[in-house]
Image: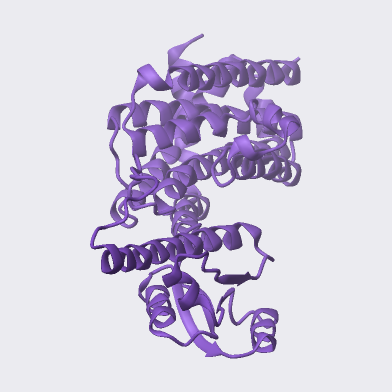
Length: 377
């Protein structure tokens, strides 16, 4: 393998990249647009749940409970009603997600020490949001009920009631519990996979269609030198996209970077090279821009978005799908990104994921080289 020929291929590709200003502008603008769009739109936080109140008790205790809902950032009280028909209508029309029904004997049961029941009616169309909202509501009602009973015991017995369980919550790594802190690092993996695979696959497929690839393969340049040269040229654009994505994540979304920036660059480079090699492999297989684009989307965007653990936890997937995720490189890179950004861990924790990324990059490079060798033969 000749370093001089590899450098010549890389310089040639860089000239093509700079000459095609529209494609270059799109390659730089698309990651910025994607991370801004997904970063703001893809929020998994559940707050300000539209809520309707049905208070049949109408006592000081029920009003204080309603005030707790009103003061919580997780709920937004849109109105009051005195019939179940209004609740059903509001949920059917989508005006509210949740209704709180306080029975007429709520205050009496609460102060007498009996179980005080509050009915929560939820729109279960979105089961994930409904379950999270239910958890918030149950926690709020329980904490208020315990506080009222504690005050009642102090009034009657002159001493406070000891809690049956002293639970203390400690949230590690994402103490603010904001979804953007783990969505944005995952977006970096998705963006790099899509942009890198499409960049090399579409551009090289264009050379196949124009007939220039056959001329290039007929020169003394070896397939390995051709693959490395093209990868190095497009890695310049890939690193620019990486810098844009990380910069927006840190500055615009204020995502914490607790780990080593050097480790972030090294692992991102490893994943970027593998994605670029994958695009070259697709171009060698497809040889047309339309087919290369379709293969690029199917093999980069969908697996990186759905099977990497970026949005949906791999542990919650069916066993068969979990096995499939092991061949998705974005899964390991998402784990690395979350470990570096949120946990601040290093190679001693992430060594397996880094090793698997390195194996993936090497395997795809070998496959792309052999495929081009077959085309040359």
